[in-house]
Every structure is written in structure tokens, then in C-alpha cells.
Amino acid sequence: MHNYKKILLTAAATLAFASSVVAAEKLKIGTEGAYPPFNLIAAGGQVVGFDVEIAQALCAKMETECEVLTSDWDGIIPALNAKKFDAIVASMSITAERQQAVDFTAPYYTNKLQFIAPKGAEFKTDKVSLNGKVIGAQRATIAGTWLEDNLGEVVDIKLYDTQENAYLDLTSGRLDGVLADTFVNWEWLKSDAGTGFEFKGEPVFDNDKIGIAVRKGDPLRSRLNAALAEIVADGTYQQINSKYFPFSIY
Image 1 (tube, one colour):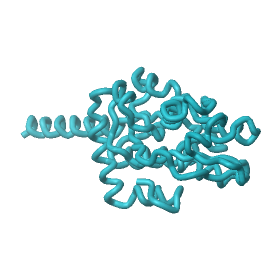
Image 2 (cartoon, helix red, strand yellow):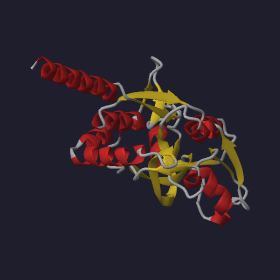
Image 3 (cartoon, helix red, strand yellow):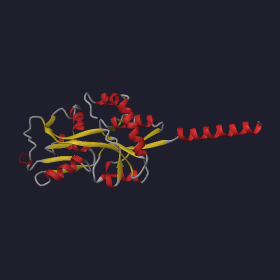
């Protein structure tokens, strides 16, 4: 009987240890921290935004701790592959080029690209009308790639390390317009800096799927997909969506 109790106690201790290991799992989430309202650094220094809240909700479903780290946009995929973090939740478009370097989850929202320019300015978005204009976009984004692929021969493209720097040059008059994600532009147009600007024309690209990037072959991808399906099904996603947008972006 004594040995039997000892076996039971040993088994219980082993289970407790295993549970503590599982509970102690921590996922490191990489984001940019310079892309409001999706990811930005608040006045207190913490990283906040739609991407961050989605990441935290996914971690909660997976019963893991969630540590959010920031990275310059240009180096965010190399940082993932160097294991500085486990996943990128940074409004990253799923592209064939990026899929050569990382795996993506199912999309967690769908984006569009749209021009903004000064209010009242003559700014049609066809190729003939844009000829000779100076257009800004963030480097290594779908917007920058779209400009190069579709308007590279007719417009002067200026690429920036951050979206904010593109907006700064727009407000200072160095740019005729900016092409960026519709939802990011929408947020900026509500700001004091954006009051003199407006959307121009319809979205030029409206099926940009945004996913979470993980290292090639990482089983974390399937866990994230399952957690994403759960937060969509139980209303958590919509609660987060409603904090940032008066319309669904899913």
C-alpha cells in the first residue's frame, strides 16, 4: 500500500510539473509599433493597437503568455527567422514573395489600398492624371510594390521607413499624395495632421489578405489558426474590431 501511495504521489507530482511547464509557455510576438491604429507605442511606452489585442486574444485562447516586441519593418521577417520572436502580428500582407521565407496563418483581416491627397486638389487616380506626380508609400509594403509595378513609369515614387514619415512629407508639401492601407489612412485622416487631406478615388487594390507570419514548418501556425477561428466564433474578434472601427474589417 505504501508503494502504491508513493507511485500515486510521484504521478501527481509529474502531472503538476508538466502542467507548470505548459502554463509557463510564453509566445514572443513581433510587431512594428509604428502603424496606428494597428500597432503603436503609447505614451507610457507599452505597445498597443488592433494587432496587439488580436495577438493577446489568441494567446489567451492558447493558454500561453504573450510578450509583444517591436522591430523595424524592414528587418521584421529576418528577426522572426533569427528566433527573436515566434510570430509576426503586424498587419503583414500575405504575398508569394514573403511565403518563400515564412508561413502564414489564415487571414485575420482584409485590407485595401487607397490614395490620399490635399482636400480640393485635382487628383484623379488614372495613370494619365498621375503622370509626373510625387507619391509616397512605406518601403517593403504592398502599397510600395503596387506603385512600382503599376505606376513606376509615370510617377516619382518616394519610399519611407515608416508610414508616419510618409505622412510628414505629405503635410510638408513634399508629396502630391500617399498610397497606403485604407484603414491606416482612415485613422490618420481623423487626426489633427490629417484634417486638410482626403481620400482620392476608389481603392486601387481591395483584396489584400493580412496574416500572421511564423517560421517555415512551425506547428504554431495550426494552433494560431484554431485560436483565430475561436475568437471569431465567440465574438471576441468583433469586440476588438468595434473598439477601432465602426465597420467590420474581417
